Length: 136
Image (cartoon, rainbow, N blue to C red):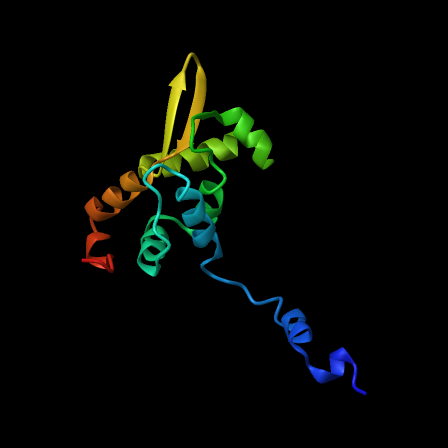
């Protein structure tokens, strides 16, 4: 009788293929997060393509961890285990592109993930991206 390892059963093959990376993983997780917004986010290949145009993989990973409601930057930095200055720089880059909201109130900086509609409209109006949109 052959062992599981010798027989090459499905479980053994999964173990061998465990190193395979899903290049869309961060974008799929971001889509799921955005689907919690009031307007939702479609689970479609086209929407994933739009997210890829708007976010790098690392930015998508960060964005999916940003709360949907305004949260103090310092608390978010602590939750993510990032230095506040480093997170502030990343948030500023995303905010400049309209992908997150950031606002100061009484000397405190708050951040929130921008709604899906804002993202899609931003993608359509950004020079150079319009011609890349798969839906146009």
